[in-house]
Length: 320
Image (cartoon, one colour):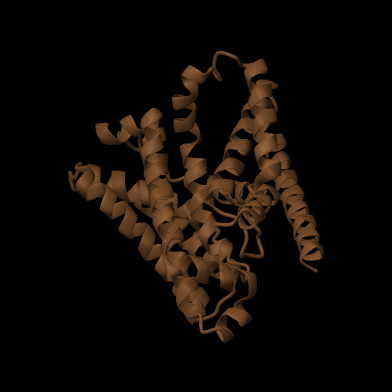
């Protein structure tokens, strides 16, 4: 790659996630001052375990957003909760299956199936993504409560052990999978339809198929995030999964992923999720209520969208 090409890509990367990276440094410094014991580098492994479900939810939300056309999948959180219920209640406690060679594929297939349903509704039936995934959100929430009316446990020992430093393994698996996807022609097609699906269609890109696959990828990653959630709480709880939905979207936007599609990546989404986790820790140190946290999430989302719009306008002016 030429020096100019490398510089151009570096500048684009900085524009997309530079603010989130700077915010990460600031929030980490504030947390080190407010709570030095908890945020000592020796404790970072445990902290990653606490943040893993949120990071996983953000990573899962990113592929469909990159595909453009308002592809925000708000069923990611309920998918995590549904996977949590299926793995613990249906497979482990009722069927007596505890092997990771059974539970992990089951979680992935469950997530992929939900993603395929969302993909069918949005790309084949052509329902607006926010409406289609809202329907899936409500159905999954109801089915999860039917399967699991109240919290129950425990989780298998091997899964609970993934709640600490070992939580880096499922996160690494997602990044490894995405690394492989980035080296396929599919990735360029995804970014192309996210930037301008009409131009991509004219160039011969199979827009419908590419977007459908993006939903399947999102569902599969949400299945992994559901396992991380199960590892963190060490049981099954029908009420927790849905709480990650909007926070994950805020994390993706904060990480520089354009909600219009076609710009950003999973690294930015992960940094955005870590920023929100660190912000939660700062506010918790001041004993603020959960209502203030909700206000903070909303403010972050609005600020991130405004920042993204400003950056996109600046980029268009530079190209002109």
